Length: 194
Image (tube, rainbow, N blue to C red; front, side, top):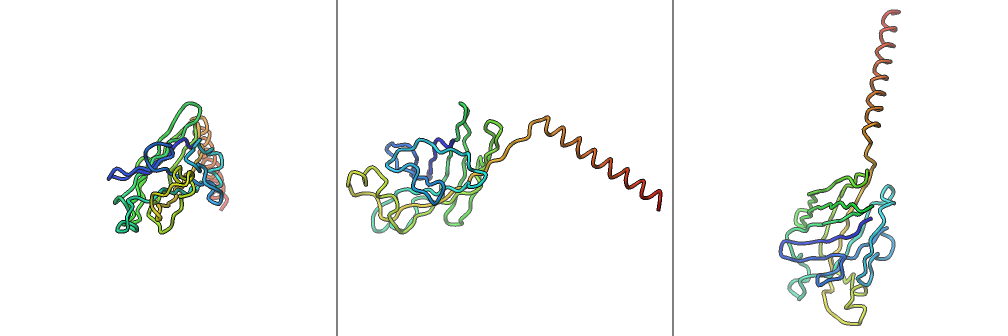
């Protein structure tokens, strides 16, 4: 289960799924559904469907505000931190996105949690030109104005795959050896009759 997510920048900007003093990070998964954590409440997302759909859409309130900053990103790069938790164990995946070069780098982009390998395949985050989160924030819910009319938007993608157990590896190696031996034997027979 994805239990928390945050986007941070080196100037101290923070968007996260926790209702605290930072900006909220809103997550949509599947991407054609409503926001998972509307009204600032995030209780986690099941990762059972990653084999068919590992794409997530994320949105956060624009910062800094003000006319001169409407189209500028607050930071030269952004870090995404995801915390996955299952059966009392947790795994943290991180990635870095640079808007100027549109480059993604997985910092701790993969790991194994309870026999499943999770990989952060992509992440992007940049300032858009529309107000995307106004109706979902606490301020928007109680009728207050604030924030920016130009919010951040982005995506990230997770994939998962099983990790073979040692016994499985042993059987695979024996199988490859058996195939190689059969091919060699068949080849010798063919050469003898030619």
